[in-house]
Image (cartoon, rainbow over all chains, first blue to last red; front, side, top):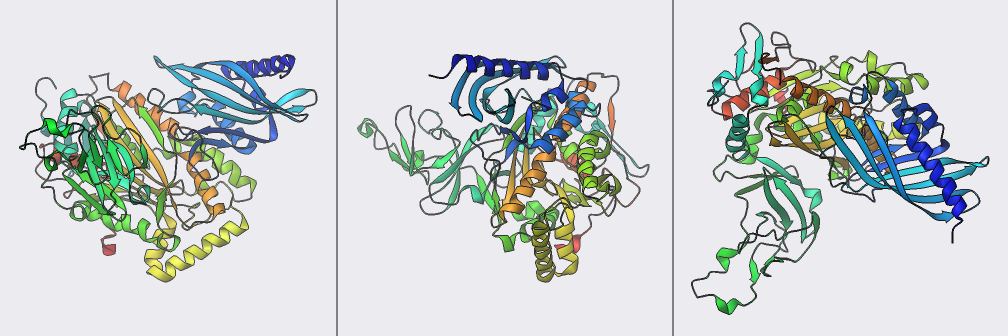
Length: 161
Length: 445
């Protein structure tokens, strides 16, 4: 039986992360990640995609994630300038594995993106590996797997899920 | 325009003035959309699948081509066949998974069963039919034409269309450069994982965008900045900003609506390294490059190694062999203001794991829904389509470079597409064979 207080701590952390994204506080969001981090979004037709041999939509390490954030803060990121409105809903949080160093957590998400008269929901689930550092949590790996069959309503994954 | 559409009025091609304009109703009209379906998509060759997707007998892939549910299967006899995915009994789809391997396909409605060569091999309650009922006639229906070129399977719904090789015509030498370049590495194979996305824009806007070198510094400034920041960090300067795309570039109209643009690029695993890659990787790329020059001579080998090719096989296959990877991007109009995109990367079968990783990283960085560039193209096209609602502004302009040796930043390749488009719709006597420049590089044919 996982520690419910630990799950609450993880939930608080994920809600905090979601708020940073919805408020476009991207530098603060980036600071949640560890040096050896990964942020992965597989394609819709290969949810189990492995970035080392398969095509995926996103496979960022810290350097590429920094590049993504720099881009999104630029007024030349045309798809997101002006910023779209987003709402990250995070739910069904479960702790799958807990060690002294890491926590493997799963959650479901719906991320709404609203812009130019369109509403597009990104539906899927997160797999997190969270590092327990300095009494707090950091993100070692975030994998956002879409349940969508295609990006029919979305055109792109231009926001961070 | 009002009333029946007059295709002759949709393109204003004035080579003597160096002016070329397209009427925006070509992107918004329902009648034009229907005409395109009938006169282009029901009549041309359309890309279906790559041979690497069907390596073994029984392998199959489901596809939607020009709105038709199809599937393509390699039969027990090794032959590839394309079928209409509809039971000959009452219509249900007999192939209900995107891909797999199967000896036979059983319709779940009443249980009719077809083998992977399309023959009807089982009917529950056969005794209910008379002797006039011919089981052979009720086999799966083949797509009227299926032909292959260099591992690419194409289909056509027009039974008497010219053969595929003849259809490809002037674009073949460019396809051959990319196909020959990978012979020593075991040929191309499709990577698992593809991008399926839609854009709220007419499909021809994505054709133009895929053939357009002019928009790179404006639309893709954040991508260029990202790459140049990384290049500067390893002491290579701001390569992408400095190596203007126009340098050593060509725009080509290859006839029959085919064409593209070509430009020098670093970061091609075949075969021009990026300074960002490891010493081992750069040496491996140098060896590939030397081998290409040895096999194909300096001129052709250099062309294979150094230049990126962004091609169109008319009407809807974008064939891209660039520093952002090798891919097929296929466009399907689903409404006048909506295009569906299916995009899959290919990799050399025997490429080293390290080069494969660089190749896939370079592809992801630019291309695809999660890249640093493609989302801004999507935004640009949706912005154009929204702008077309201002109907008092009737014309879009594609006159760039009409009076000079065409460069990648010019629009000759886009004009070639439009000329053929207008010809096939019945609004122009000659297609893209008549253009503002003759296609070059013909010596490679």
